[in-house]
Structure formats: C-alpha cells, structure tokens
Amino acid sequence: MQASLKPSPTSTFLLAASLALIALPATATNGINLIGFGAESTLMGGAYTAVARDTSALNTNPAGLAQIKGKAFDGFGSLLRTTDLSHADARNDQHADNRYTLLAGGGYAQSLESLPCSVGVGFFTQGGAGAVFKHINTPFGSNEEMSSLFGIAKITPGFGCQVTEKLSLGASLSMVYASIEKEFFYNTSLPPAFAGFKNKGADTIRFGLKLGAQYKLNDQWTLGASYTEKTKLPLTGGTAKFNFNGAGLGIVKYDELSIKGFALPREIAVGAAFKPNPDLLLSAKVNWINWADAIDDVTTTASDPNNALAPQNIISVSPQDWHNQIVYALGAAYTYDDKTTLYAGYNHGKNPVPERNSNPLLAAILEDHITVGFARQLDDTWKLTSGLEFLLPKKVTYDSPLFGNDAEVRNEGVFFHFMLSRRW
Image (cartoon, rainbow, N blue to C red; front, top):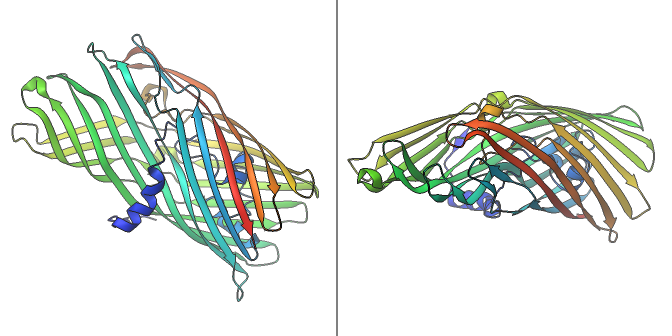
C-alpha cells in the first residue's frame, strides 16, 4: 500500500519530535528494524507475534489488541550504549563519536462496549542506521568528519477484534516519517577526483499497512501471524552543499536534494506461544524480511545550484543489493510471584548487507541479540517493565575503492529498555 503526503508542520513535528532524540548509531538490529517494540516485546527477543497483548501489538501483531479489556497505556523508552561501533582501515581505527542513543514511544488502547474489539494508537521508533565519525584520516591527507544519520518513526492507529471464541484479527495503518542527513569529508576538494559534501533536510511521510491474526488452539497453545506491506521512503525536500574550492567555485549549494532507494520491507511473521503451566510462557517467531526488494540501489540527486558554473545536476548511485533475511526469535516469561514476571529472549537474523557493499555509515550488520528483564506490578493499575538487550559483536571486512583493501566495520552494544504501563 503506497501513498505520498506532503508533510504538514503539525504532523512533521509530531513525528520528528522523537527523531530529535535519534542520532541513530546503527541501532537497528534486524537490518534497519529494531527487534521489538515496547519493553515486553523486546525482552522476549521479539518473539511476540503469538503473544502480543499490550499496545505495542499495533506494531507487532494488531490482532493482539483484542486481548486488551478496559483501557491500557504503555510508555516506553530505550537507551543504547554502543561499545564498539568502529571503522578501521590502513589509516584509522576509530569508534563513532555518537555513543549514546535515546529512543521513545508509547501507546493507548481501549475496548469498545458495543463490539468485541479494541482500538488504539501508538507512536513507535521503527529503526534506522548511521554513525558520526568526527576525526577520520582521509586518503587525501586530511582529518575530517564522515557521518550519516537515518531515522524512521511511526504514528500507528489500529484495531483488533475477537471474531470467534478462538480467532482474533486486526489491522493497523501507519503514518511513517523518515529523515536523513549526511556529511562526507566536507572540507576536501580535489578536482576532478573528489568534492566533499553535506546533505540535510531530506525527509518523507508515507503510509504503511500491517495485518495480523491470533488463533487460540487450546489453553496451552496460541498461534499468530502478521503481514507487513512494503513502504517506500523517497526522501526529498533537502539541500546539499558541495566543496568546489579546488575548482575555484567555492561552496555551492544545491536547493533540491532527493535520495531514493530506501524502503521499509515487506514482512511475513509466524509464531507460536506455549504455556506448559500457569506460570511459564514460551514463545517463538520466524520472520521473513524482504530486504532484497526494499534496499537495492540508493540514488542521490542534487540539482538547482546557486552557481551557474557548477554542474547543474549531481547524481550518485550507491549499490546496496541487500539480501532477504529470516529472523528467528525465542522468548520466555516466568511468573515469579503475584507481582513479578521474569523475561528472557534470543534473536538471530543473518546480516542482510553484502560484504562488498559494507560501509561504516550504514552498519546494519548485527546478527545476534540476548535479552533479560523483569516486570513488577506497582499497584492495582501500574506496572514497571525493564531489562537489557545485548547486541553481540559483529565484524565485517571488505574492500573499498576509498578506504582500501581489508577495511573493517564493527558493531556491538547494550540497550537498556524500560516501560511504564497502566491498566484500568
């Protein structure tokens, strides 16, 4: 499902408010997607398709909203500490300067009196990628910044309905906002070989669709499935500055910038949840992510320069050729006592980025994640959920025409997740 929308000041502010917090240092962990949304979903390793029972169901499996009776609110946040987001080559071994990232989101849902349905709306940080390296020794003998920050957020209304005693169905429609900015050796100008540049302001608002189902086989087994439609993210409306000092033109500003080739992928997820006894919940998910159709070639076009002697159009095509990804997730929730629940999870998805197209600014290479956490009932209506997600080390070595042979990108980090929930 595709539709474009010119961002209004209000809608852009609502979505960009969180992106102001998202200096995303390659935080996304299944490609450019986070492994889960909301603390419980994430602390169960993302294995939430057959479990989805809080407002994050809007972005995991909207059929799960049907489990919400009365009113529900969840406010969640995550703090990432990158422990080794690094670029290395013959001249460098540098850690990214943006070591911390704060993400936020939340949701509200309530059941309807006249129908066996619940409706809700949520705000989610979907993911993104990027890093800021302020002091890279360039092949041109200088020391400069290279950075790229790409963030994606959603406002998502949806519903879930109990169609039969065993079957629930749901759907959500997301308004997706994405933005990007990039700087690459901006102070370097060596015509005709190289002109440093700086891009900013390119963004987009598009619509995305998710469908979901949950089927309760019996008191022990529940099955779940969800389908997510592809959402193209053509980024436009930005500006670019190129350093043409070496050609005697100075800094040239281009008033039209577009970056095309990014998309949120089509996804199909299936899962199962099993309760061997009243205190233990086990879950599993398999998620097919169609990256090959979502991120192929990324084309950047700059036009309308403020200097008639400069090139009128600068077009750059960056091959990506991402592979499809199958994500496997396992989760567990154990009721320790009447106020405390313990969580654990594991998530694995093979790196979708081909080795030949690896680069330190789109380091979406992470594969393995381990999660642990807990929930504590504070009183009759409020609950606190918190825990850790360990992004296990991943390293890719690749050959680059700019950085030379055996260049290296590394990624590793720890997320602290927390969520405050109310039911009434």
